[in-house]
Length: 110
Image 1: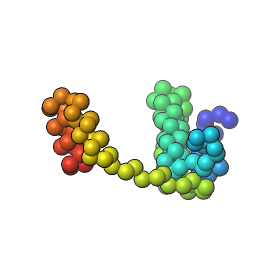
Image 2 (image 1 turned 120 degrees about the vertical axis):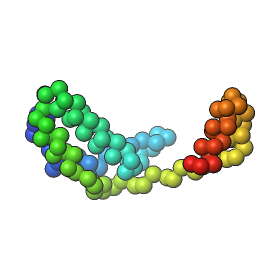
Image 3 (image 1 turned 45 degrees about the horizontal axis):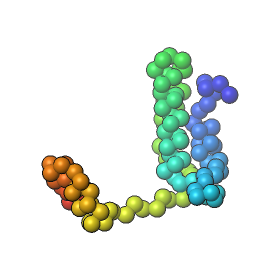
Image 4 (image 1 turned 180 degrees about the vertical axis):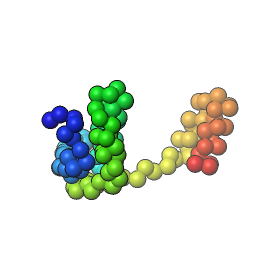
């Protein structure tokens, strides 16, 4: 399909099309984050093509108009847990004093 024919409707359809991901050798449904990363990559490709005048800019504008895509079958990623204090301290011990202090500061303030 030519890129000039690819628009918001097809991007929405593509995002809703069930895809499979593999984790530890078994099929798992993709996460919303993974689908958003794919959609973002597609938009970046269109942005680059438009910046090189290989694609009409209105194609990119129409794709960017999609704010929230429904993601059927996708699940939320597992929340990332904070690092344990002893691991942080062991890491800081291996860093220079200034880097260790900066690392501890970032851990305290987020």
